[in-house]
Length: 173
Image 1 (spheres, helix red, strand yellow):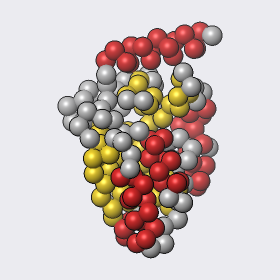
Image 2 (cartoon, rainbow, N blue to C red):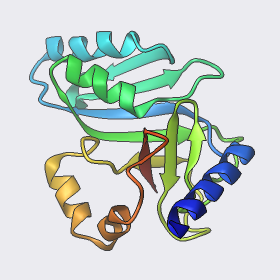
Image 3 (cartoon, helix red, strand yellow):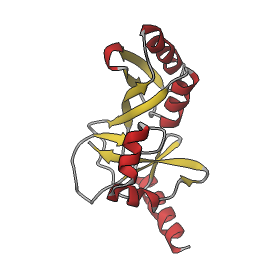
Image 4 (cartoon, rainbow, N blue to C red):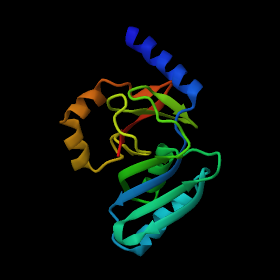
């Protein structure tokens, strides 16, 4: 009970400070075998309401996504779009605006319709790019590796959702 109250207080505090503004994403998709596969994902990503622009890097099976001004990247919608095209997310990196303040480590915050939590020590890293660590946002091999590490132990202690909305756990890159 105390843990829930603490998390809610941290969440409230995080919402008041509007930490991050995730305006760009880099998506690594898996299962692509040709340009038509890439085109299918590209078309699904372009349908997302927050997307301003999608650029495909076919040789790397990767996509650069830029959000519309004032909009936030929604990882759950990206995953759904990729899976609707018949593929999987292998990695997802979010970039916050340079002008945004650095998020507090281990304190959930809400941006747009999503909750996020940067895992790590306070003051560790000064980057503005974060990798999403949740299951289904990494390859099975990468998720298994994280699950067996100290970072995985930290992930297992965190809430899966807040107010019925998934929490996306991030690692500074």
